[in-house]
Amino acid sequence: MKEEISDKKARLLDNAFNLFTKKGVKDTSIQEITDGADVAKGTFYIYFKDKYEIRDVLIELKSRRLFNNALKELRKTDIKDLTEQVIFIVDNVIDSLARNQILFKFISKNLSWGIFSQTMQKLYEKDAENEENGVLTLFKKGIEENNLKIENPEVTLHMIIELVSSTCFNSIIYETPLPIKEYKPYLYDAIRKLMK
Image 1 (cartoon, rainbow, N blue to C red):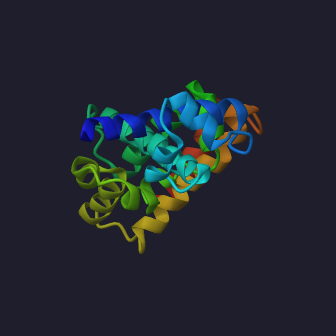
Image 2 (image 1 turned 120 degrees about the horizontal axis):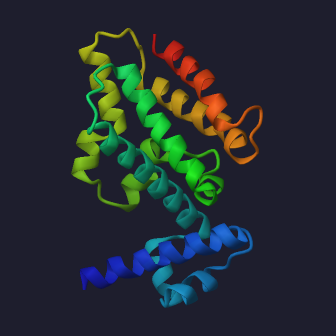
């Protein structure tokens, strides 16, 4: 029974993502989401209150996956410096978004939701591995271990992610003010300054 429930939720999420990226959230109906997921409309409301909530959950899931994948790649390196670890993660996320512009347009300027949103905690049980080994935990631990004078680690990390999300969008999608490869050194210099 539990597998069937999670399968229905996964089908709703998958179909909603496909519809939202093709038609937009505004032009997608809940009926279309449930029809494509082969789920009764009432089942949708077991998991989500409306299409905007499923959109928010999708943004959180997709952005969290980006950061978790970047963290897995970081663990394969021998980078010890916290600032360089953050830049490695950011670089990995940027490259993933540049390869998947449909996802980036969907996430738009909400990349930080995967780390900071409370909706995930309300709708889903926390993944213990992600909680213990996530980007925010890495960041806080690195600040403590390196005796850095960062007063509010959550705010600093949020600023870094928002800087990446908002400034890279035009660079990746429209190549303005510069193509992303040319833009990255300026971005990473700004991150290094924030981390001092």
